[in-house]
Length: 253
Ligand SMILES: O=C(O)c1cc(C(=O)O)c2c(n1)C(=O)C(=O)c1cc(C(=O)O)[nH]c1-2
Image 1 (cartoon, protein in one colour):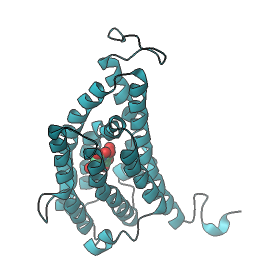
Image 2 (cartoon, rainbow, N blue to C red; image 1 turned 180 degrees about the horizontal axis):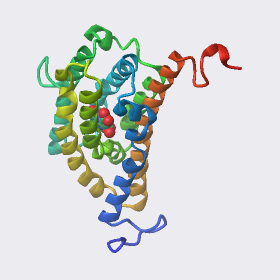
Image 3 (cartoon, helix red, strand yellow; image 1 turned 120 degrees about the vertical axis):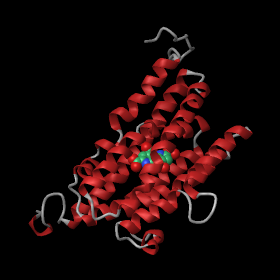
């Protein structure tokens, strides 16, 4: 595995590009939110309409903050071609005109699931844990070096697969959501693939020391934790509805 490794003072050998890539890919392979019990139940068709609506409302908070964190990353680049590439990510979400882009498509997903635009856009039902997780990601991209901020986006290596599974699951189990509402997920398959294909070579090139390589892997781990925490909060709110994790409220000691 380490045939390309070269020695680096103090912090161990620099991983060769193959080993570094394998280590980055191993992070979402092991701890991506597709394994989260809430996501597993979503894909099994076991969520109630109220639970699915809660997820759509809370995930919207993540969606609307993605272009904010991408603008923070863009501001770290001193190179026009990189800024242009990153600007396209912002446009993926915001569109280039009213009525376009991923945020608009997520609003339509909400409508297809019976959530009005005003309700979704208000943010009133965003859970505290979701707010903290999303703030954590935005602030990470604001405060950390560009290598780590870009590495954190590499969860998208795993995103196209989860999108495909989600489309199948929604079509099979949640027929009450109008089919047009799934456009967000369909569009995201290609965008996510392109984003990760673009970001991976940047991370490989910018991590020049073993310490930086490890920081990139840690950034990706952190991002998996952000996505995991978001679902923890959504799941916990459902348990409260059902009377708490130990059963109905009155039966708890
Ligand atoms: O539904 C998902 O499972 C999922 C995961 C991720 C991800 O892995 O970060 C993103 C998205 N969706 C997504 O829609 C999206 O726009 C997106 C942007 C980013 C990012 O970090 O730049 N991740 C994701």
